[in-house]
Image 1: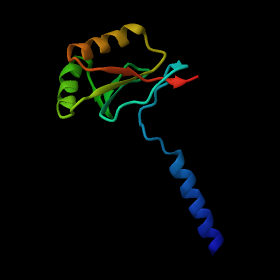
Image 2 (image 1 turned 60 degrees about the vertical axis):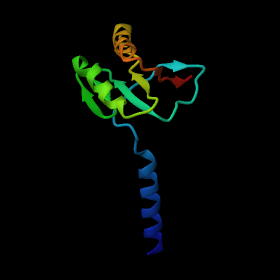
Image 3 (image 1 turned 60 degrees about the horizontal axis):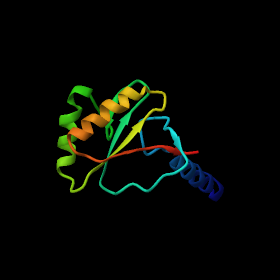
Length: 114
């Protein structure tokens, strides 16, 4: 009986470590340098199909400015963490950064370490 409980415990521990905190899968570009991200962040993700997400909510590009403004209004010093799939074209990156610049929001581009 204790063997079964032990295996169940191990099973659930393994299962919980495999759970991903982010539901949106993105292949981040790689960089040799990096730094920690401040606490008041808004995750802005663009997946390989060019779908834009604020947190886990999908947003149309035309509504991006108003949605970002509404999301960051309640934060004291918000920082946008931009997670873009590395297969996307640079113009998409520039368009999104242009929107954040219009709102005067600092942007950090997320990457994986090499």
